[in-house]
Image 1 (spheres, rainbow, N blue to C red):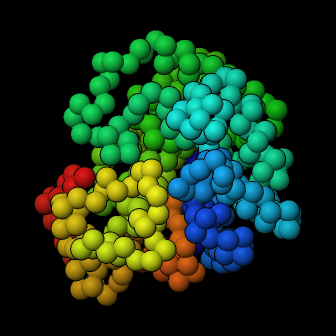
Image 2 (cartoon, rainbow, N blue to C red; image 1 turned 135 degrees about the vertical axis):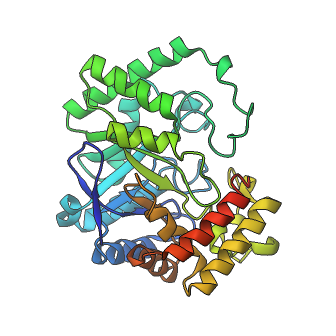
Length: 350
């Protein structure tokens, strides 16, 4: 396993981050135990979760993924120091989570206490803001005029951020979180938080996780350049585009038990005619280079300059092994050239 620095945190994280959002619906406690044990045996020391997991989210399962991890930690307390655990505070939108309120100076302490209790730990290594309070160009909203920045009250947004930074600084000082990060944000969001942290003498964000994959490249180069220059780790989530890049949804297929057979809050916006054509082309490249389509997508992601650790998830051990193996692969120049040709043909397929 290869490792990289998590921004300016001083932490060294595996190039593979174990995602957990299926634990609690598609995966049982036993499944999660097996995944964690195998991942650690392969050198993975980084686990990502969130208070709203598992996905698809609901009031009945809210917090269950953190409880699954907490159950494991309660039985393996000696392993806690070996792991870097990242979780996230939910943004606005869920009535059953703090009445769908904004992330704020008041909500952060409450959310942290809840996560600590469910995770059965005294501290969180990286505490992330799951998505901005403002509407941002993520989750399929990246086409022109889907989000109108001119409608944002910038000063109100900046003041809200000021309260967030204050609360995070207090949590760090109290030892409840060690570092903090962002998710689903933009260069403006990153830089505004950095400026406020410097102004208020609070540690800067150490990471950001955004969707990034062969079907969704909007963060290249501008977000990733910002991350590299400001020493903020860039963590791609959904490197398989919700499983689409594995090829299992080609032609409208819906394998039994797969995520796209479940109630969808987000996800199917990726399923377009152009995406289907792009995935079919990537599947063909993978076959000719004797790797799986998932491994092609993951190995490609891993070789992009500026990426720190890629968040993967799996519902079966076979998938987990296949995905981790991708990070031991080096794509040939010919393979990357062919991939680049498909990117040029389908640069923004959904």
